[in-house]
Length: 197
Image (cartoon, rainbow, N blue to C red; front, side, top):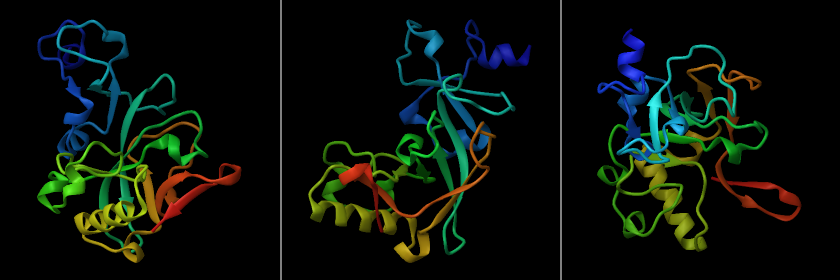
């Protein structure tokens, strides 16, 4: 009964949020959020609308399409709330869309004109997340974004990397924890993934 009130399609108390509006407290309350793909056409919802998932068993893509909270521990022991998005190819870190959640907007920690220009998957002033993917930018802009990310996180390259990721919900067919060695940059010759620190 409680489940249908909170999560059912026909309840006025349903919990639904746009993916961009989810905050750290949402993931502290519910560690997994899925896209409401079966609710297309519901008034007020878009393809970005998400709902919390109560399922405790292993999550498996494509049955689960969403984001999972993760504990992230930096090389220096600093702890962060992170997010990962399970997909079919665990060996490809580009597919997992890792992000670090902040308790407030990036712009409340650091300021720079680059944070307000356009959109990039790494960091923007009006978002509470820092993504691991470096945007397609000029080299000088990339250096600035990386520097701002370290400032917002209150650490350095040596303090952050490698960072260990442990999802709070079991994800099928992947290890319980893994590491990232740096910010993720596009692929070069032979499809090799580059990381920057």
